[in-house]
Image (cartoon, rainbow, N blue to C red; front, side, top):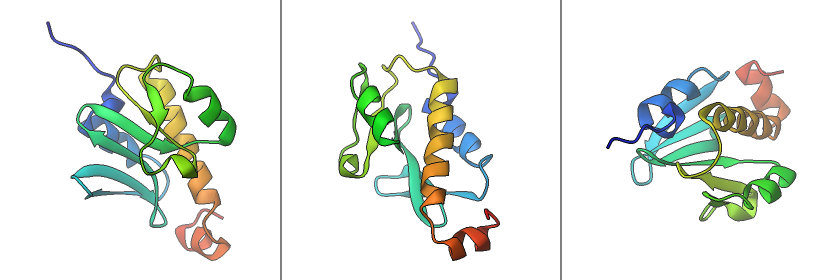
Length: 122
C-alpha cells in the first residue's frame, strides 16, 4: 500500500511552492535540507523527504499548533517560535502552505527597512 503525502511535504512540492513567494530563495544546507529564506533569513525548511516542515509562527499559533498531534516545537528553533509539522499532523497541504506564507510574512517584516526596500517589499 502506498501512502500519498501532501505535495508540500515532499522536496519537489516544497521547493516549487517556495519559489512562488515574493523574493524567497532556496538553499540546501545542514543535512541537505531544503531551506527557504527571505533577505538571507530562514523562514521555513523541509527536514527530509517526505518529512517535517519547520517554520516560524506567531506566538498564538505556536501555542495552538503544538497541542496538535504530529506538530512539535522545532528542535533548535523552538525558542524563536518555530514548529515542526510532520506528515502525521491533521493539517492539509493547503493549511501548511498558508502557515508557510505567514512565516514568510513574519520574517520579511522583521528585516530592516533598508533590506525590505532593497528586496522591493516596501
